[in-house]
Length: 53
Image (cartoon, rainbow, N blue to C red):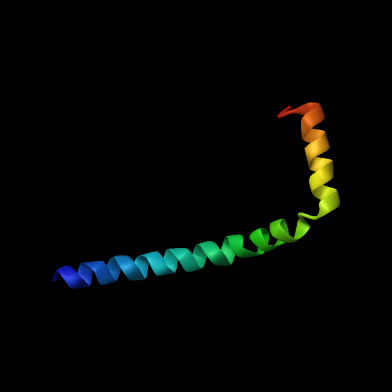
C-alpha cells in the first residue's frame, strides 16, 4: 500500500514537471539566447544609472 502512494506522487510530479517545462521552456531558451555581450553591457549601465526605478 505504501509503495502505491509513492508511485502516485512520482507520477503527479512528472506530470507537473512536464507541464512546467512545456509552458516555461520556450521563454527560458529565449532568455538565455538573448544574453549577449551588448545586452549585458547595456543592462548593467542602465541599472547603474537608474537602479530599480
